[in-house]
Length: 329
Ligand SMILES: C[S@@+](CC[C@H](N)C(=O)[O-])C[C@H]1O[C@@H](n2cnc3c(N)ncnc32)[C@H](O)[C@@H]1O
Image (tube, rainbow, N blue to C red; front, side, top):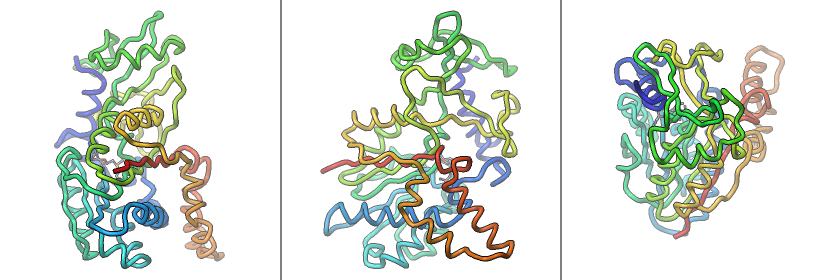
């Protein structure tokens, strides 16, 4: 019997049968940079503003964590090269991606932009830097412990060999604090606790000498005690059984940004802003992209539909958030 966290880790990342080893891109979900290059372009503009705040001279790094095959990094590099050539010349890229195949692809694609690139499989291995570390949909892809209210007690969900879920006492002492906050869950309600996201932000903060961490993901600042059940996605639909066909479906949980902000504060990260993706994109000029896609033909219509998904409440606009944290020297 394994904790749900260990089940999720192997269902997503087993080198042969894990979801990310087998993923057919766009079959179950697409990410914002896979949807439209405007995402990376708007992000690059904001990264440029943040980089300019750091210091007038000296080397600067842009770190992308969980970079996948490098689609977003290339959008960022292209925009920086076109719009901020002076700044772009000072920047080196650091890519972090646990999937070695994707990491190699990302580094190769980014090299084509003539930027200096180094690549790592873990955040813990990267050197300290001044600059900005950003990620898109990394935190939601980290395995979570799963707690459930049952008979007036908070139990942890485990999974046996046949995929059956079993409730048992907490596997880790660090879960006691989050479990104690869940007293208002109704019987049978569940809450995903990402110890991994808390540890990740602390590790990321330890690498920043001076600069910012930008985390884009779906989730919210969960009020204490509210449910946050994980979800399984298969062919763009939500599956009800989390443990069915491990490796064939994406498993994910909304990011508890309240926990990430608190863990960041413990690691000397100051909260700069927390906004919806919709606000981030509109403030960053998405409407100009929409105007540029004017036209009555079906290609223009499709283009506008993709751009609107980035801001629409039923698309990514309200569910996705952009968290910016700062570390001062
Ligand atoms: C949902 S995908 C997002 C990919 C890309 N950022 C995008 O927006 O298209 C999550 C990525 O994070 C990677 N990942 C998961 N845990 C990681 C970790 N601890 N360190 C680095 N990468 C990780 C996965 O392998 C996967 O490529």
